[in-house]
Length: 114
Length: 111
Image (tube, rainbow over all chains, first blue to last red; front, side, top):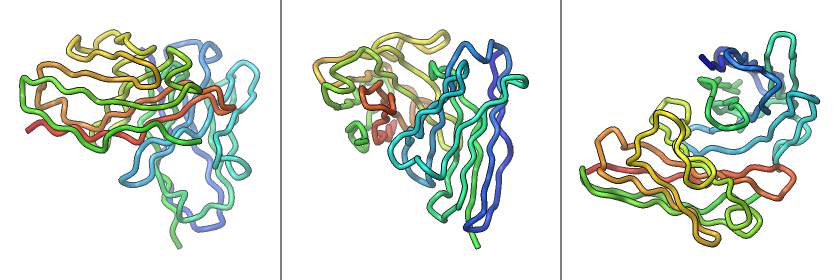
């Protein structure tokens, strides 16, 4: 069955970096794009962008340029989200979702606190 | 990019029907038949309920239906059940470079 399994919760200090992984199984990884979605505590879903799993070309939404990087390792069917220079306002649950929206990871809570 | 506009909350009694609206522009909702609806229970990942305006993924109850008129999409839930109580989000393809946008979310309360 199709699954997206994300890495575990992270606690980071301001200014640090974090890398969230999203391992896909049960389908051909390169057949669907991978989307990234952020949900701050008590807030709604926010579209971060997506990555073309064939070409590796990322597209970032407004507000997610510069410190946010989407990447892939197709050899292990895994997508990554790296956030650098972390700020308190980056505290959120980050989701990966298959390009058709039908399958989502369980979410990764990133907490940024000194 | 601006989020799509949804009511903050709606409510209904068991067995009733409710409709949640999602208003965008001709650059997103009105311009393409790529509107999706997601259900999210507290602490859980979103679940796809409707895609491409009115299609239900396998396993989703036929009590859930979607439609669109102009720049506004709608999700209707008929025969409300207690387990329908959740947050609902619309999303749409957009002609902006990001290709995707969400609504602000609607909290459904089953009275």
